[in-house]
Image 1 (cartoon, rainbow, N blue to C red):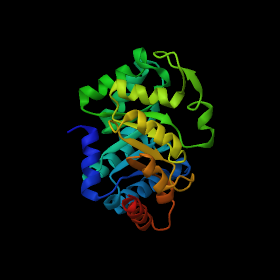
Image 2: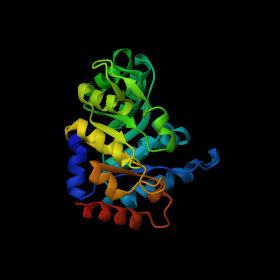
Image 3: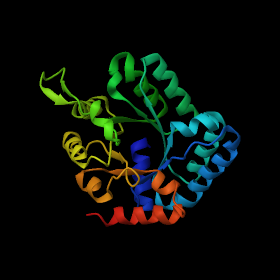
Image 4: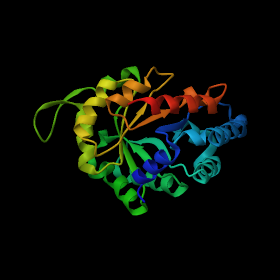
Length: 256
């Protein structure tokens, strides 16, 4: 079963299109065990209401990929939740390949990559590593923060058509060309979600971060074409994470 199929199956079984992002504030090194326990507890209590778990780079740094993080991956997989590494791979091909191999070897089911580096000697080795291990690659098309337009929103000349085109549209087209398993577009920009959705024509699911703390709205993101909502701090920093996750899941289910 492919990564895309595993997420779709989990979403159907749990009646949820919410991806939990394990997003936590900075903790001093001596508090690493506390951080690990917080992450483990969140997975335990929230898992009935989400369809996948996304790990952020700032959780890898204190816990270590083959130490605490690998144990958290095992915990997520015990709950039959696919896992995503949000590393935004963005280097030369040989480096990207090694990065992907480490994350896939640790147990991640997919990773997020930045298409700015291109295909040849860029992301091609990542897609090859994913194919060899039956893993997924999700491409970043438009981020959720206020400054996203400075890079992802630039007007560029499309190398194939010669037409002036928004950068995020070029990236959406590359997702189709390269066979990506998903595309990230911030929930804070529903108009961008709609444009990317029109390019993808339903062939690749859209993952939308930014719901809650960053101001992204559930209904507008889903109606624009998002398949999955990535939710982090609204859940992880909540006084009752399970209740919050269920409420967000239920709101998303009500959107027609």
